[in-house]
Length: 537
Image 1 (tube, rainbow, N blue to C red):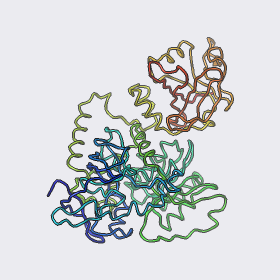
Image 2 (cartoon, one colour; image 1 turned 30 degrees about the horizontal axis):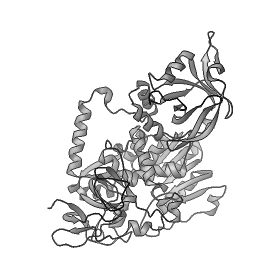
Image 3 (cartoon, rainbow, N blue to C red; image 1 turned 60 degrees about the vertical axis):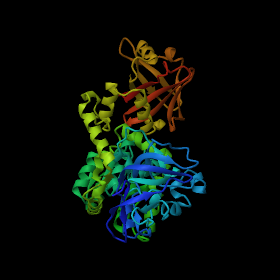
Image 4 (cartoon, rainbow, N blue to C red; image 1 turned 45 degrees about the vertical axis):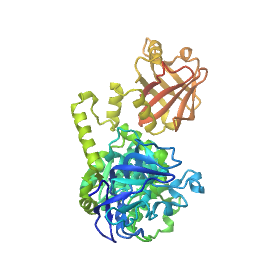
């Protein structure tokens, strides 16, 4: 075979077969990407079976990850050498795109299901291939994508983790984060424990959900759901009983989309709750809904690609992965590109949760990463930081550098003012900082939040053990506001008489990560990070 190969499907229901291909240079707005990995998604299988109407012979794949080799005229967002994830394309100019919902782009079909016969051809014969599936057709070693669906990511993200972020993980996690938007203490049900459903589980856990119930017929999938943060995992016949035990829930994501799962989702829903249905099934897939189920404010909403803005949400998922809150590697099974037929078969049979095809270059890179990890000191090896206790342990160990702390803070869920009521004990994460020294001199114990308008920012313990507000040190009190910092809209504590703002994101319902901002709060460019843990009042 030649330098480039692609997996070609020549007819409805056919097997993908590797053949040598030639790839055209990038035109205006296009990006030439050397693929390192590409996921196998349920949507690919629907398309192979003719459920989307994409023409043959075709190259499928729409969860690509790789390295930019060249860019066409007008491309400014990515550059040669960048590591990227490939997702869905959008026009950027229609009403949906302008309003921040490019997943509902008016040109979604023409952009993402276009044959694009000029992008790739069989090398030996010159036969044109339909290689514009989701504007990438990433079951190949080199592909043409568009600037709108090409997202730069840090080089330290393994290709096998990066690839599923383009669709399956994005759909599950972003539906939770963008559409359902649970807050700490909420309950959520996930129907279907495939890649989408398990990604929803991880996002729900990161959002601080109190209860996460998963329904799936496969015991192994249920066990994995529990490992990833579900609080209960049952077969479809056990869902009603599980809901009855804890009461109806406000949030449900249905990743299956049958009549049975639609009924189960609505039956689980509390008044004013929402079902997000995300499944793509062949044809119109008609289901009926009892109108009475929707009374009392219940809602069912269809969601495409997690209602994501890929340039915003894929970096957000990378931040969650860096923080240990989105362990995508736990659901991935890697296959060589030459094993694509087995990867497709295993996906159809449910043997693989998320099959990811890797090129020889990516396989060599994975071997190097494993060797580097094995030879690293124990303290430098990846830890189970995703578990709340593990994340707090990591922060107490103070092993994250300033950039790592910033990424972690951005990746954690925002906090609502009501979550902070009461007394919280604080401790510094950024050591050697001027703020740490000042707080230590004050005898700082923590903070007490009486209400949105009344906060004791500096609580100290007196000689007789009493906890009191030191308003001399803090020059008065403080109040709570919702403020945007680093792209995160969250609660912030603003001092009444000092130019200081402490902004918070949630580690657990009983622990938050704070960062101090304001005039002259940085110490030689370093920001001050600290943790507050809920204390008994």
